[in-house]
Image 1 (cartoon, rainbow over the protein chains, first blue to last red):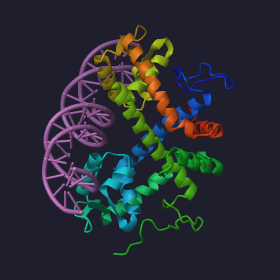
Image 2: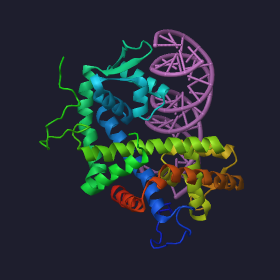
Image 3: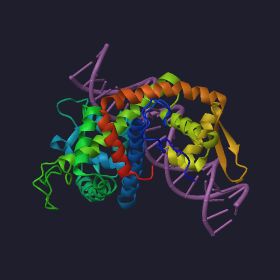
Image 4: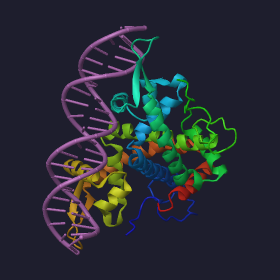
Length: 167
Length: 167
DNA sequence: TAAGATTGATTTTTCAATCTTC
DNA sequence: GAAGATTGAAAAATCAATCTTA
């Protein structure tokens, strides 16, 4: 039933640049890379489903609300927001449309630069976020953080710094 | 209205006087979790763009070809394949449609269970995969593996085992 | 001219319903 | 009836083109 997957059994002592799981990868490389793909996909799906079930709020939308609430002055420019959540600028514009239609977010014009637009939470948006955050936190803890030791958490932070220095 | 800003520390669970990024998370938790989100999203985008530019093959499609080529007997059932790549069953069915239309994949009926269908590479699909794999490997190395020490790679493997024991 | 953002057209993905075989 | 898979309808994401202001 279990088809051989890329993270499959491997002789862990195979030192030679010999046939590993994924051609061209060493065993450790394979585990590090495909584990990342699988784990992040798994957790993302789970967290998204939880949020939709409990609050009718997809993960992307939740992230937008969260980023906005964290921004200086409680508002962010669209371009900056698109960079933070992983969405094209037009994709974000559509998502903000939806959230605005649901009354969770508003667009505020930018006095310093009339081309710009800010996204800002409405009171309803703040309430929604507070509710959803509890669900999300519990999910992230259960699926991820609680399975890691403090040392592993700290090392992971360093790993991401190496991978994506900007973050 | 001066409601407490959402980026203020919350003291609902009496944790340390935490000047955290995300309310409810410690600093290390935040780095570990959001770093994962950002890094995997960043790399996924980059790798997808590279494959499309070099071979007209999106990352999802590449993963399907790779999974099929790795499967026992060079063929996999649709349901199993959908589980391996991150796609709904219907999403996969459509992706296989496209790949079939491009001549890279075929559907084979399953003699043991007439309800089932196998996906299988065509010779053109094997060639395409071999070409694309070089691009992909280089990308994964450049974006990810080369930025990690051997120790970090090993640590990551352990982390994914803890997060997703099944993989 | 370039930057910030939105819109139109298209593609990709999903949900729900369906069909077929177990 | 349930499992494997596909299809129609609808939602979501993207690219390219557009509009407005710097």
